[in-house]
Structure formats: C-alpha cells, structure tokens
Image (cartoon, rainbow, N blue to C red; front, side, top):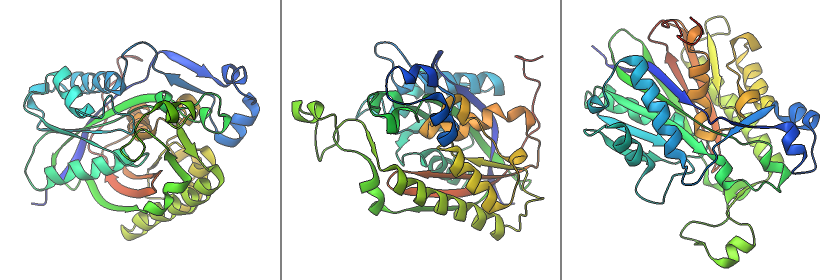
Length: 337
C-alpha cells in the first residue's frame, strides 16, 4: 500500500501582548483605516521580555500538540522547525525545542525559506513518512518577526507579528494526507525582500547597526505583484492537476501576508470567501506561523476527507502549493465545551 503523511494533530501559540493598529498610530504616520483597507490586519501579537526567542513559542505549540494528541515527546522521530528568526545562528532552533520538550530521540533541524518555510518543511517531513523512515514527525512553523522589524518604518511594521504552530505527521494508507506538491524558488527576488545585514556577507558591526540594516527590507509593490501572480497560479495548478474544482475544494489555506493577495488567490482558484481560512486580522503576518495557526484556528471546522489547498509565497523568492486531504474529525474543543 502507498504510504502518505497525514496531519493527525495541530498545536499553536501566540504571545499575550497585542499590538493594535491604534497603538501603531502613535509610532508611525499611519491610521487604523489605512492599515485595515490595504492589508486586512487589525492587530498582531508580540513576544515581550528578555531572552525570549522564537523557541519559546515553538515549545508551547509543540507541548499543546502533544497534549491534544496524547503523544509522548520521546516518541517523536524527527522535528523540523521552519523559521526566519532563529534564536541563534547555531544551534538550530529545532534542537532547542526538541531538548525543551523532551524529544530525546528526535533528529531535528531548521528550515529557512522565508514565508514558504512551513510549507517546504511540511513537504520535507512528509518524505520521511512516505519512505517508511519515520513514524512520527513534528513540523513547527514559528517566528518572532518583531525582532527584525523597524518600528519607525511604516511600510513593514504594520504587517508582521509573532506566533507559532505545530503539526504531527503520521503514516496513512487510506489515501489521506499530503497527496501532491508544487514548490518553486527564484533567487532573483532577493533585491525586493531581504535583510541587508546580519549574515556572513555583512556581519553585524557598529556600522550595520547604525544604518538600521538588521531589519526587514521590502519593496512592497514588486513583492505584491509577484506574490499575487505566482501564489495564485501555483494553487490553481495543483488543484487542476488533481481534478479539484471549486465545488470539491473544501478549504484554501493561504499564507497570511496580505488580504488582497489572499483574495486574488481564492479568485484564481474559483472559490468563495466561505472556503478560505483567514486570520490575518488577528495575527498579521507571522511568516512561518501563518499556515499552522490557520489550521489550529479552523481545526474544529475540518472534517476527515476534506480537500485542502495550501499555498504560500515568501522572500527569496519562494512559493508553492500543496494538496492535502484532512485525516481526522475534530475532538470537542475544551475551551468551548
């Protein structure tokens, strides 16, 4: 029988502090109406405190995942952390998370593909399941974007927030799980979306700090144009290749970068807003956290056998789409029971 990798559980975490559009009005020349009309964002969560890195959120997301699924950390075979804001250059944030949750058997590593990283990591982790190498793979998407955002730059500070999500992948032989993928990258996009300093090309120095080069740099118009076309096209391509129509797609799970990009992707696939997972208004763009946070927020609405198209676009450029058939019915949410 063909083995596929199925998502069998979801966990998530966002920090308590909420940065609203109204508060941003006191930091930069912007308004709540301007932000909401152009991005769809009302608020975002920010991780505060000394020595609080991305791993803090990833640990909490994995702990919730294990508690919800009844699994033990020691049974995890592999843990992949998709992040653009690792705690340290090394060791990998995945290593830090594994140690903290007690995943003593797990082989772990980080994956960096900007906002497409979680999707790349999901596709990568699935291969270890499909080949029979591992039985339990945890994929984490987590970012503390507030650590690389210039809060004097109104073009970027309105967009990003902090958050994390995690999923458990396990073998399935019933035709559920990850069934198709189409992944791309184009390094020519570097000039439009990058961080100028902090890597080996321009290591940190007094000069790079003084010139504020350790923050996200983005040429918004170019990124928007490329994202709208490529994210929408690849989502439609995966749907068409698998014989999926607007009627048979149950959910579009888009990266939450900008509501106008999300709307364009949904239009290209031909589905209405009732089938689009949307939480950008609550969290902003959490980079690698957006897709697992969507799955967590909508978990109670998902049903076994649902057809999901996951699509993302990130700096670099990176982009792609996955076709995933949901593997389980939701258990009652104790928070609403």
